[in-house]
Amino acid sequence: MPTCRRMFAVLAALLASAALFVSGCSASKPAENLPDAPGPLQQSIQATKALKSAHLEITVNGKIDGLPVKKLSGDLTNVPSVAISGNSTISMGGSDVDIQLVVLEGTLFAALTPNNWLDMGPAADIYDPSVILNPDTGLANMLNSISDAKSQASETINGVNTVRIAGKVTADAVNKLIPQIKATGPIPATVWIGKDDPHQLVQAKVDPSEGSSVQLTLSDWDKPVTVTKPAV
Image (tube, rainbow, N blue to C red; front, side):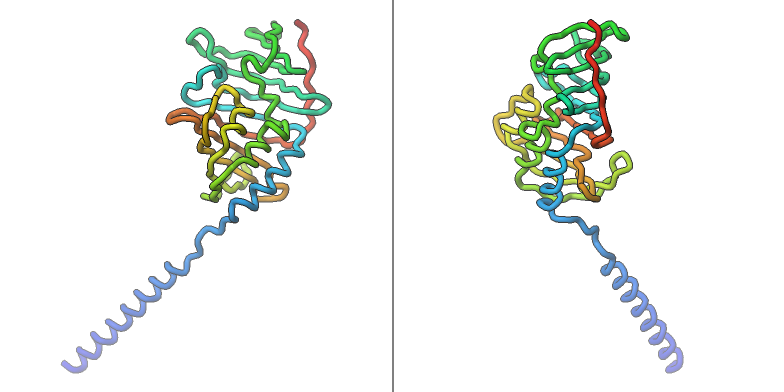
């Protein structure tokens, strides 16, 4: 019996040691190492201010009064002048309609059928996406207005490693970027900033009300873009 007791004691000690070893390994697993939000934000503000062109994707979820755009995909530039060329889905008469669009020198040109262009007048009367790269009123200004910023996670967006940061943006910054939102106070926002230099803004989303959001995704930063005036 003493021998059996000793064997059980040894086994119990071995099991206890194994449990401690496993527990110790789990506790020492390193947590995700995220940079503090102010660092990436400041770097991205400078990169976004200097941005001359990009490919742009806009997705609007829910209903925002006065904003007919549901989706937009286009190439945006502010050199030699502010312009965008692409395709959009807009709400028209209760239905979603796909159009070609060009915004050049503040004027919106649209085609409901391929290359059948119409002069729609000032883009700002509908939505002027060319404001997005404006360093004073566009995405750079929105980034600069974020408060209570907190790094949340690492995420890969379109193959780019990013830091996801959440906070709130001022009504003034939101209304300059997307006037149709008509914000009256700070609203929740999330931005995804590239981890690598120059820390480009990859994606930004604002949530003006429950169930509604506007998401802007950028890629092809500073890739040359040429926009020509359509034949009307």
